[in-house]
Image (cartoon, rainbow, N blue to C red):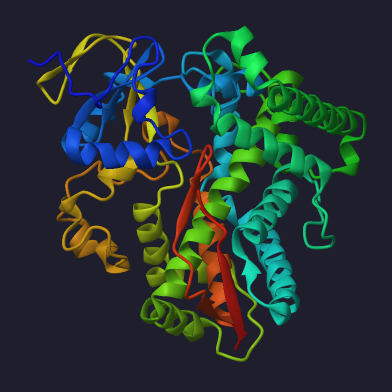
Length: 461
């Protein structure tokens, strides 16, 4: 049994491991540290200790819901100051978590995607039309535009709001405020723990985020009030309608308006940023691996011949098996949620040998586990055929978790996967992808991972 864990060098009193930390890319830095510190190690951020788990067997054990649960700490704890007990930041034991989860789960089932498919096709066509125009002037800003696409999608299918993302060069004020708040939350893990000192050092950023939070809350409250006042003038099957009119099937209770507001903000912010990041990484990988893009395009053109205007049916998306493997491999190399926080429900042994105490903050470092040698060959190479069924069966279970784990895995994963495969298919059908020969992938970390400054040339096919 082991109680003492390795830690980074040059640890200091009070500051902990801040000298060796990288606040701009903390998770990527932890994955690099794992190469020298081993499959489990300790990181101290000011006074708080975090156990980092990057070994596949320990990672799988940490995902045991009978012994470990979600931990609310660091950036997630700050998110809770803004989103309250919305799904992402709620404690599993809170009534509103199970209430909202029970109410919303049917809306994110695979069968529910049929209701959203046509809207996804329409918004993807908006991106294609925008890129037809924009590409005449040079390379396009990939992540900016995929973010507009996914915000438009979740806005429409979730809350009946059209952000007109491709109609104006200026972003929607609500969308811009939401993105600023989300980015601030992602950096909050390294806030100064002394509140008055944090206010002194970061007063401008804090004032900005406070104003943005107040504005977004006001907008959503107005939407909720309007829906309650005019229920017949709005969709009766979107997420907002579900939250306003559906009772928890287990308790018969409804969500209150404050919780609904928190859920709306969470879905709009996290729900679009995660999917746009996956699309952007996939487009970068397809552009830099033209053999993979050609193979995916052959599969796509078997459904929608080259030179025709595609009219994707819902069932078409599930026929694009190779393109789905492209997305799966993208999420292996660049999981948008690169890790997730856990805590022991009681004192226990992790992997049968490491003693961990109840409530101890722990991170399941997905980014490192997804790049472990168990994936075969060169684990850093982009190879969609890793996800062929016969190869997947040879891997240990529980080592691929791009959407988190157990009860607390991302509720919108089916939505994200359907939209990503559909949109990538439509892009590859219309365009050839031309990478910037001078670009080297830069990965930004906020609450999620995303490629920074990614631009691609597009060649109309």
